[in-house]
Image (tube, rainbow, N blue to C red):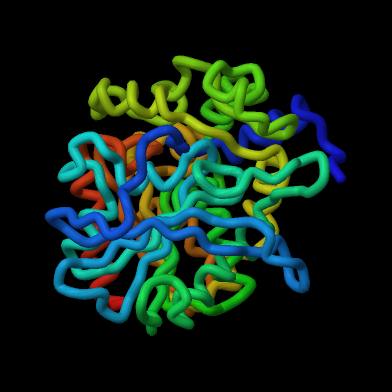
Amino acid sequence: MKKVGVFQSCIYSLLSVIALVMVGILHRPVSAATDQGICQSVYVPVALGAGQPAQYSIYGQLCLPTSGPGNAVQVLVPGATYSHVYWDFPYQPATYSYVRAMNAAGYSTFNIDRLGTGLSSHPDLSLVDVTMYTDAYVVHEIVQDLRAGLIGSRPFARVLLVGHSLGSGVVWIEAGTYHDLDGVIVTGLTHTLNAIGEVRILASFYPADLDTQFAGAGYGLGYLTTEPGTRAGDFYDTSDADPNVIALDEATKATATDGQATTFAPLLLDGISAQITVPVLLVVGQEDSVVCGLLATNCSSAATVLQTEAPYYSPQAQLQVAVIPNDGHDLALHKSAPLYFAATIAWALQHVVP
């Protein structure tokens, strides 16, 4: 049962508010072909924990390169108030779609909406908690299904798990707990956050039922979203962002749950990332006001970030860092996104080949 009220959850959510959820944009139809790959929409039945019934569903888009599915798939986990659209942005996709870039590089992608987000199930939060650990168990189920060939037409031998912001916290838990991956990419999240950025984001969060975009959705108490007009300040370096991207982000925002918010902060201190035993790439934007700044992470170079973050990972993680100049928190939604994609591809080709 719920023990944390909406206002209290907002206090905790300041540490987890990181990302974009985009609901209301039509997803790619089944077997839609693009110039970069072939995509199909999939609903995956999932349980909330071991021994529980698979009574909920996760929406995802499985996109395969035109050259064929290959042996490796990237599972993409969006952040708080973001859905699968973050990874496959419909505006100028040649610049902003992570999915297209990875498909062109030979990787299949499975791009999901987390539970309580986008087109996935929205549980009644007066009856169940949807936490970071719930998300991690659900992602674990998806990884197992991909390996078994239950999603798409064939099994994948290699799985690379990619997270953004709060989604990166989910990646920490999944990778550190279940050890069923071949590689991990963490974006928009370090272990030391920017207090000023956190306070600003806290001030922008409020109950989703109060927002005109969700008032008729019937989600109920426990779902949060950002107040209108706040996402530019929360997630962008506006000097490197297209106003049309920010406008589409605002128009298609979605929700996060208070359980995800309240269970995020402990991840910064509980050592779960040190349990990851596969190669890890960490990517941050140099102008990310959520993780970078005075008394936060020094994002002036990859070397400074690596010095701060390396103690939080095991030697087996072989931690590498990429810092993207002129990029804010939403790495994939800035004009410098192609630099981010290129850095990711270069690392992935070395550690988890397609």
